[in-house]
Amino acid sequence: DTNNQLSLAIGRRGQNVRLASQLTGWDIDILTEQEESERRQADFENATRMFMEALNVDEVVGQLLASEGFTSVEELTLVDPRELAVIEGFDDDTAGELQSRAREYLEQLEAELENRRKELGVDDALKTVPGVTSKMLVKLGENDVKSVEDLAGCATDDLVGWTERKDGEAVKHAGYFDGIELSREDAESMIMQARLMAGWITEADLAKPTEAEAAEDQPA
Image (cartoon, rainbow, N blue to C red; front, side):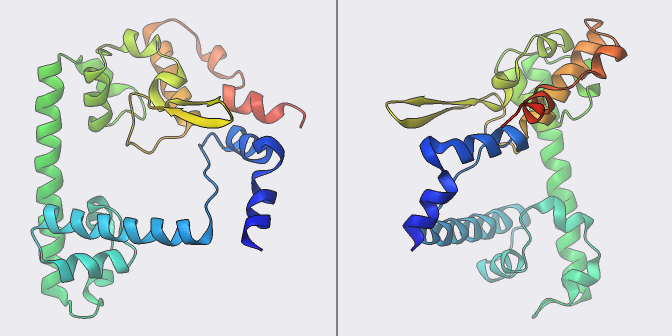
């Protein structure tokens, strides 16, 4: 039954989940079918609401976009307009208007994030670290990480958080990038690039296995 399958997936004392998390660099949650259904419904409702607010459209349009699998405004600007035009109830004009509104929204958002970055006193140089986005710059500034050297001094856990077990329960601690989808491997790479830019390490050091790769090489 479902509970038995859940037990098998989790493994003895959660070993399967922990191993998979180490190999992929992602936190992994095991869900029942009902929990998965509820999660999908919540994702659909969140996407619908997000499109309504960002694009200033009604609920029906938001639902149509969400039901087509779109999950971000960015996707709308990158997709071929014909993929929007063929949605039931849409046409070429609708597709063009939606993409125009999406671009305007992203430009406004980018400007707001840039202003917030400057207010927080985050150095311009931090923008040049590979992988760092405008949203990340603001999150870093809010956590008093304002220079390349500050980022170089961070640990992976600082950025993406960590999970510990207390009394048999998994307790998650949020990182600076809480709410931003980023793997541990990418977070570690970002820190290493900052250390390279700060002169703390060399290109030869970067060639060494990362934390995630070293974990993958460990015997099971």
